[in-house]
Length: 212
Image (cartoon, rainbow, N blue to C red; front, side, top):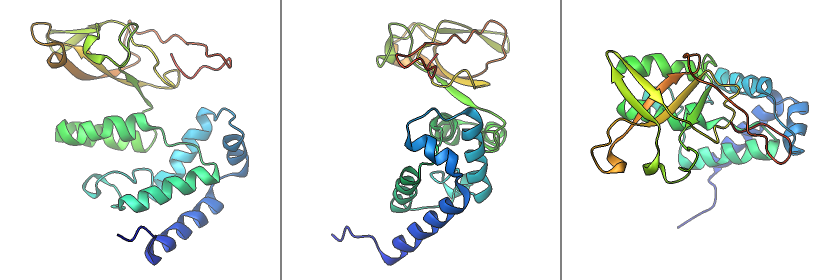
């Protein structure tokens, strides 16, 4: 097995390097390399640059607007972005929610939500862990009870990364308690402007506020 990069791979790497040299602002790169906090505005700016180029959804299937890169090309892109000091591409919408919508969402849901996570209309955060239910998601306590055309959700989530910037959250909730714990969980999209939701910061040891 030949594990060396091909000439086409090397040409692609050069294309990525030239793009980063032309489009990544030096001040943002310096902050990333110095492990300083990247602002909401920096993240939104870089997402917009990648979206304009068509590279924000580099890991999506072509049928949903991806670029059709091979795993090797995806690796090269990520490696060069890290080396250049580019802000990370936030995974919550693009890499965590999008595949679920592609696999299980209706056509209407796909056509509504996928473009909005690309053009910056929606900033998504995750609602998985809970106090007392970290990696053991089968023990989550947050409930969603259907009332008419809506679900009423009660519970608490934690370690909600960058939730202070988000306008939407995808949550794992318990919709059935009369079965084994792993089988009674549903995946629900929630507008954070919904009455009754409170986002509280968790101050980390460095004084930052990345989790909520």
